[in-house]
Length: 394
Image 1 (cartoon, rainbow, N blue to C red):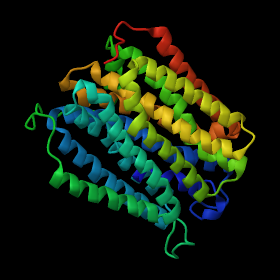
Image 2: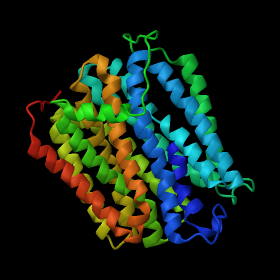
Image 3: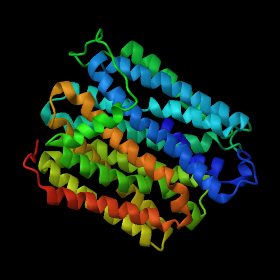
């Protein structure tokens, strides 16, 4: 929810001169750059943090690593809320750095799920945790749009969603502390821990050197490149083409979240029981690429709403199944590491895409949709062409 809260409102905070957050005389080009930096710095820091924290969870356990993530998210979102209140852009960036570095809780939670999952139920259980993420993307944008709209309550403003996100993180940390039991039995809580800012790069390089993982790492990299273009730019696209408001963007992203929920909660389990994992990924990626293409060339606004639901459904099947493939290729002592790898690949793609927001935005709203369509289709083609010997249905 914390991540989903920001996306509907960040465009209005940074881009709209009437928001009052930035000086009104700042150019549109610089505003586009600031928009990309605000999103991109979060994802770049996620890249470094996800790999380090995922690796750390294999040493000190899932619970301690998750606590670090949640406390960091609390501090980062709180600092961001204060920054918006006092209209300090660089303090907002500092909050995004903290929240981004400790945002790697999803891969650790996925590793915890894998710890207690049998091979037959691994994809389904990963789908369940992604279902929780999807529900957050349904509720997050809705809450972001609602909590930032002063028409509902006079004291609601752009900082309210960030205060709400910090409260969610703190409550989550309390619940985790009292209810979560460590799932990783091999954790050495007394081992000496070495943390390096280059650890994320080392982990990613090691994945591409891994004989079995390198094929799927390339596929995931290209897939997330395509997906990041759609997700990062769909709000700008809707603003430019259909002149959407914050609340309309919130509702649109919520429909995407409903598609995620269907895919993670039902479709992925249905598919992995009946089809080989690699074939499921290929078909789901081709379908998602086709749905983005229909969105791009649609002349009716309602088509975009139908397609975003289908995009959420098919993309979640591809992503969940691909994560299950990654998990099946390493032993139980490397689950945190491999989930950290997938999280890092996702974060670096989103980060780089976001940093180029200003440049891409100047070229028109259609370019990101074309890049999204191309990336998703190319990842499916690569998976067909590689055909590594490790392909199997379990």
